Amino acid sequence: MAETIVALNPITQEKIAEFSVDDQASVEEKIGRAEEAFPAWRNLSIQERGKYLKGLRAVIYQESDRIVDVISLSTGKPKIEAWNAEIIPILDLISYYVKKGP
Image (tube, rainbow, N blue to C red; front, side):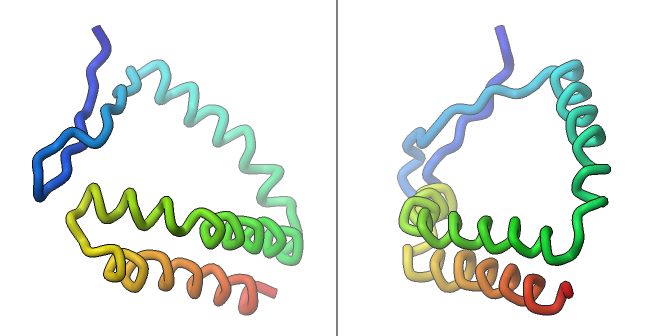
């Protein structure tokens, strides 16, 4: 049977989700795929990388309500704190790198 990790709400101790743990072979396969993909990323221009970062920022913003819900459930933080401490800083950080990268 595969090993799993159970995520609990820290306030209620309710089970939020269950995640399977990858075995060594699966981890090595994923690392290999990442290593194979890296040269393509390395060869992108700063402007092309910026387009990907803008896309990432857009997805995070579009999904921010769902992300805030997960953060709140898994950490016990109030939703406003999850938004202010987690979402806003990452959106700002991505914007900073898009502007300063080129």
